[in-house]
Length: 471
RNA sequence: GCCCCCAUCGUCUAGCGGCCGAGGACACCACCCUUUCAAGGUGGCGGCACGGGUUCGAAUCCCGUUGGGGGUGCCA
Image (cartoon, rainbow, N blue to C red; front, top):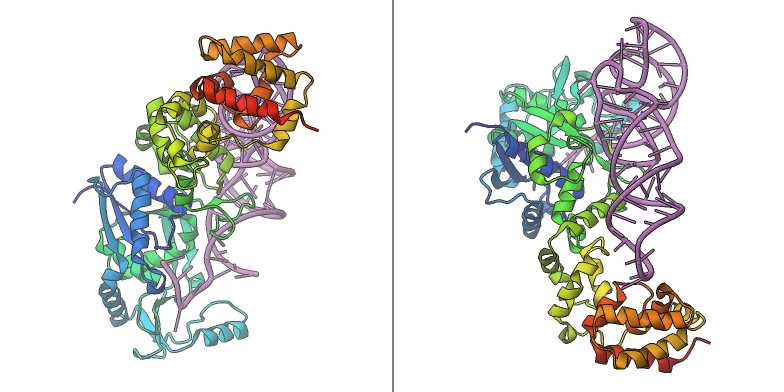
């Protein structure tokens, strides 16, 4: 096996974090670019948190991002739990060599000692007590004296004085392995050469590097990319922030837009463009160019990217992408009234007016509803204009015999009627729009009327005229 | 507290000692276009955290201050 081996090692939590998505993408871009391998490993050490369907969710989310398991670059998924024996065996080896020792202090006792000593963390109490294994005893790593230098592809060399690294736990009191150990054993077993992850892992790195060496392996190349933060500049959290990739997907963010946006958080392509195809990102991405400070995950900018991507879609693709949103259970019209041809005609006009696909139904709902849902405020506003009721009535009469029934003719006719009442087209169209669509804003009116048809248009205009003016 | 990381417009960034009187994008504002709303076009607002060095020359290098962030579990 030649070529670098990158890995993405999420723990299954029930949803896919956007920060994880970015990390996965970075790993993927590099693996592809360098003819290497992208290893997916599910870190299911903490059995209580693990559910099988969550793994499917991870694979699904990755596929949506363009990281497909059937791509030759992709390897896995592996499961950390499957290597549990190796974790314990490695711990045993460390113990046999004197690189680890058992300790019978409970977490409470450790805390008490720390408090008494005025220094936080474990104080190495059992280092030389020569304890053997036993129930409730944890196995701790014996951190050697000296300094550990972590070579990081984005930060350079980071030094840690070993005496600031406490003797961390390898095996819990019940004998199960901890993250730090399992993670390293797996990486060694899988021949990982490059560990690229979020910055929150940087403080773990000297410990893991020590473990690699203690286990007789040469540490990988490390890279720690800055975390994504919210408007408060805090790490994105599940509780306060919208972090589930699945949610963005459901709201109609395009995968390409999400991928492009995520890749440009902390990194930028050459030149003054940021909307660039994946092929270019894959070719140009370089860890040396990744920013060192946390990046704000800006919904507004994501939305802007998404709008760009939606508008760039060929109309047919746009129509296809809209389908799930037009046939959803929550659609605001009786499903049997939906007309694909009507939507297809309106599609190009809708395309420039939405930022996410989820906004599409609300743009065209009036075309498929039995009656428009009239917004009272909109009605009052449009009909309150002097001459509006008259324009509405006259337009209804005029449209009854209009020939041909085309957007152009509809517009010209209304323009004439409006002018007769001293109203410019912008004002004159308002009452018609509210009467037919229920709102003051929406896709271009005359095009909508054309596809709605004469009968339905007249029915709605007459209904509205009968409703009278706002009191 | 201790360890580590970081610091260019509100935000994402370009910049890697002279090309910077700091460029682009999002957001915001104005105007144009216009059947509403968008889209599009044009223009505008707005920044090198601060203080010391180094240098002929610093946004770029060094130190300090301040300010942010991450970590500090028998979580991952």
